[in-house]
Length: 428
Picture 1 (cartoon, helix red, strand yellow):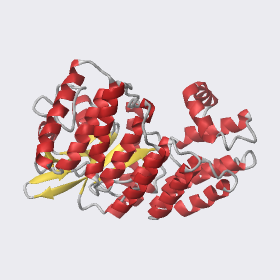
Picture 2 (cartoon, rainbow, N blue to C red):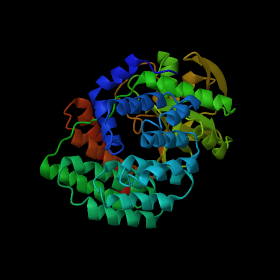
Picture 3 (cartoon, one colour):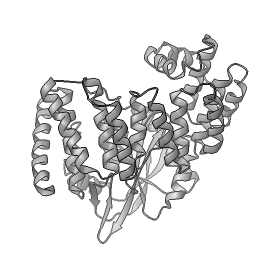
Picture 4 (cartoon, one colour):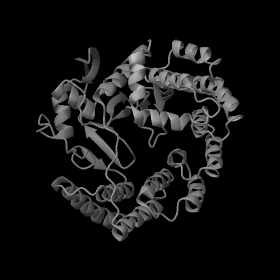
């Protein structure tokens, strides 16, 4: 796919996106800040959102005379998205020898090491980076996602106490999220709950408010991501089907829901995990994020759209899927049939109406933009009360922090306060 001059100019005019790109690559441009190199970077960023293919790898090779570091970086990024992690690391190490503090390279190398199963090396790389840049939030996000054991969490906690505490400004409250995520992955429920309780005290003491800055969902980008997943899994003969909000949009609206957060698809428990991982991770379209539970695979498309792949487990006279260890959603057993959507044949439950009633109630045909999937789905069951309690504290904290005063927000605050009281009694 050729990138037109007008498309690149439109990206250049997007000052926010241009600023972010310049920040990420400023070290690579330190010795040569010409517009030609910046143009090359923007072209790479634009084309990589269409998926990694041979033409993009060829462009990386051809750009070496213009700037070897930029060429090597994008070669490494492309190889990572094609599942060639060891080759990617070779390119990364070449640039790190010249720019050892370049954080985007460090993040990419840590992801390669994680994909190769060397979690300890990925952790060591990121902890070493804290010495020169301890407040980079993305580093803490990555470190939290790499916690697997109690020992991992204790190491995370030591660095966290050294670099992140005390929290004395609202912009630092995001660190609570990273700490909680690390604690949950190690099943350190007491520590996670205490941190959110501390956060609520901080909000009460300082009156801090911070509007929700969550990136808007892009239905067109979501369509592209779903179609690319269809291409990848159809080519590798892995059957999947639409579920939850994506199925609701398909049946009720005939399109992706514009107010959704991500895409939801399902696979049967018979689908081989390794085959699915390999198909997606070598496709050039998706990044696989660290998993919380084996029944869910979280994907990120190259254009930024997230997709949840839920394993569906047949158990007696029910079928369930889980997004985390705290909750499971149950449905009646169902067969699959093809349904035309976005110009392709997608598999869906043979009786989608029954499925949607079980998920959303009898009024599923009435659009509702204010819907809480953790509280409002009729087929939900809580399986881990301690984790659900921490999630409730976290949600309450974020509802108060956003500072909204509308009726829905007030209602949600009351609901989560009540749920916390109920779960505290159960978990004591």
